[in-house]
Structures are given as C-alpha cells and as structure tokens.
Length: 177
Length: 258
Image 1 (cartoon, rainbow over the protein chains, first blue to last red):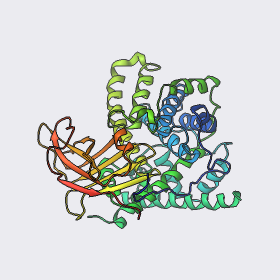
Image 2 (image 1 turned 180 degrees about the horizontal axis):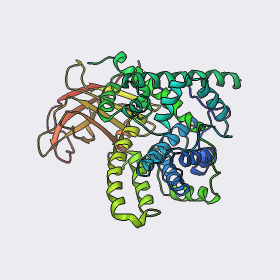
Image 3 (image 1 turned 180 degrees about the vertical axis):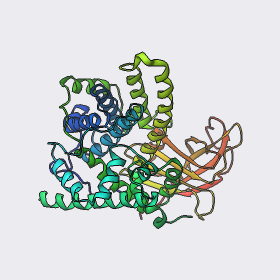
Image 4 (image 1 turned 90 degrees about the horizontal axis):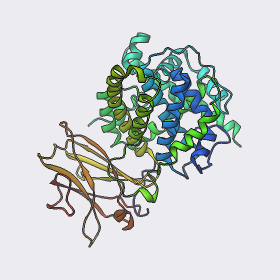
C-alpha cells in the first residue's frame, strides 16, 4: 500500500546462520525448521511429553494462522517460540514444576552462540533472565526470589537482554559473510 | 504524559511478559505513542526468543507429531490471506491458540479430575485471553508494513491511534481517555476517501478508564479502494451503522510518504 508513511519497525534479526531470509512454504516447512526446538522448549517448561505434544499442535496451528505462507523464517521463529513459551508456562502454572535441569543448551544450530552469550552475562543478570524466561515469573516474584527491589530486577532484565542482543549480533557478524 | 525515558527501563520486562497487569497496561498505552519503544520491544522479543536455544535438548519429538501438527493446522486459514478478509472483527490469534489448547488439555490426560480442573482451566482461560490479546497486539504493532493514523491532531485528550498492519490485514486501534460510549451505543471508525461515502472500519468499546485496544479485520471494500485520506470516529447504535449518523468526533489524517 503506497501513499502512507511507514512506521515500519523491522530490525535486523538475531538469527543463527543459515536461517536468515528464507520464507515459509507450508506448515510442514515450519515444523521441519523449528519443530524440534519448539518441542524441546515445551518439554523443558512442562516436563511432560503429552503436554508438549498438545502444546506443539495448538501452537503451530496458531502460529500458522498468524503467519501464513511467505512469512520470513526469522519472524516465524519469534512468533512460534513466543506462542510455545506462553502456552507452556500457562500449563506449568496449573502443574507447577521446578525445572530439574540446568541451562545446557542443545545441539541445534544457534545453541552454542546463545549459551556462550548467556555465560558471558554477569551472574545476577543471568539469574533474573532465567527466572523470567524459563519460569515465567513476574518482576515482583523475581524480586522476592532474589531479594532485590523490583526496580533493580527490571534494570537487570534490561541489561541482560540488551547484552545478549549485542553478543549475538557480534557473533552473527563473525559467522555470516 | 510520560516520556520514552520513563518507560524504556520496562521494555525488557515487558518483552519477557514479566510486568504486572497494571504496569503492562500503562506500558502499552505508552507503546502506542512511542516509535522508539516499539522498536526496542521488537528487538528485545527477538532476543528473548533466542533463549529457546538454551533449553536442554531433551528427547527428539515423536515421529507422529509432525503428522499431527500438519493435520491440525490444515483447516486453518492464515489471517493475512485474501480468503479471510471478511472474517468477523476482533481476531486475537493467540486466543485461538488458547482455545485450542484448552480443548486439547481438557480432553486428555487430566480428564479424571474434571471438576477441579475445569475451575482451574476457566481461570487459566482468562489469563490466556489476556496474554493472547497482549501478544497479538504487540506483534501486530511491530510487524512489517504497519502504517499509522493519529486521531488527536492537537495532542489533547482523548487520544487515539490506528495502526494498519497490511501483512495481517488488520487495524489495531488504541484509545486513551475516551469515555465509554453511552448505554446501547458503540464507537465506530470510518475510512474516509475524498468524494466517496465513508466505509466502516469496525466498532469497539472503551473500558471504564477510557482505554481500548481492539483488533479489526480490514474489510475487502476498504482494501479494494486503495489509499485512505482520513479516519473518523463516531458514536453509533450498538452493533454499528452502515453509514455514520453524526459528524466525526475525532478525525485523523493518514500520514503521507511525500
């Protein structure tokens, strides 16, 4: 649509090498690209294989409804992982489960870079980020857990995500010609 | 009015879904007004999504899951496709996910404890709807091909903005300090083109605090007409009118590129 001012906020995507730019062709294509990672996330957050399967089926349906064909792979990744995480945490709240695992990463493309970036964060930042992302805690709950003021928790989350972004971008520059 | 600097520190917590409900609503009110914060949240959401790689590998998905995913998604028509342009208004896409998920959960492993579960799931549904609308809205704000009209040219209260997400074929309407319409009435938006009758963009209502965030599917007659000059707001009988019954109470001009 021409004639209108764009407020397009598209930004460079932080994405592992080899996944940038390609466009989706079908749900099966979406699954083949990200199914294993989405399943790994759902399983990690719920600890229940049956729940992870149901979450994946519902999440792919929702993501596909939103994305449709021709969505970029980067957009699809962000959308799908956001939906899977939201649904997994919602299930997790009904069936509370403390993760019995530590952040070890996985063999997927991109995992090593994310783990390296996480490890380079100061311990305080990594801790609040893990509590927010993987346990789905709100800032007040995190503040109670780490015994810091809410404002400090927000500041640490902010620093953590922005540092992660910088670290991942620096890595992408190295691996992407 | 709060500034970018006041809110910027909350962007990461918002992107992670960690703000409490009141602060989230306040942040979203700011987000509708602040291009910089929208860009920041978009970047931070992308980064947060990468954390999926930090979860342990676990098992590989069972072989039948691929088939199930493809089968269940087969009946879904992507929102952005031409075939769905006349769908009813208000399409919170994650709400659809929530509904699907609730059906799946309720129908399976926890069936035996139905009474207690249904109460829990009912509460969960409300939470999910809330999350759903948030995620839907923010995703649509941040998508590519978004254009905006502001319906408060003077910057005075009330303020309204309408975002046109061309990829998703939706308008995202945000309103602040707009008192609820009288009983039996509703707010209705109009796409106005020079020398043409106004076309309805859809109806919405504000809450007791005068806030609204609504998602309206762009009708085919609006899409077919190309460029829109103005966007107007009227109060109409509940359900909306086919043509405006009063002069616009608020009027905004879509921004031109040249």
